[in-house]
Length: 137
Image (cartoon, rainbow, N blue to C red; front, side, top):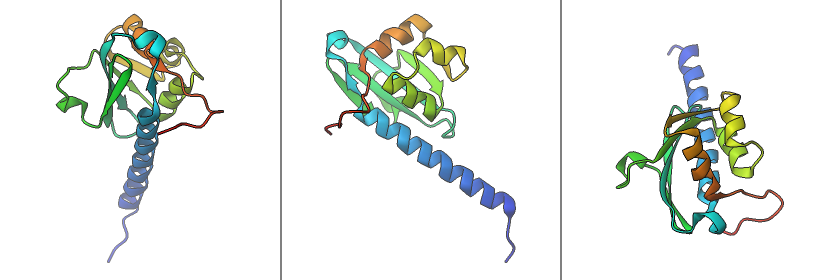
């Protein structure tokens, strides 16, 4: 039996991207709609994670609720906004550590479908997570 260094490296990289995807997905699952701005909104946001082999998830904001989907391509509503970002930048956006424009300017986020203004409007529908308070799931 021979040992392949390349295969071992691929397994580590795959493991890291799986872990990054799980973390980003967890953050997405606890994001809540901002009741002050979500009102009657109906938007589908697709997030592609560049450091998780391009895997994606979707957040369908409907009024004051968010429907999470692991398979945005199978969702009945086509995305109004598609962004590609790293797991770290996604987390920073969700806690308000970085604004959407800052993420775009530092090349941490690419808008693949939609405009920067549409992206800002969509992210204003989300309630920023606070790290100093517990999350009730």
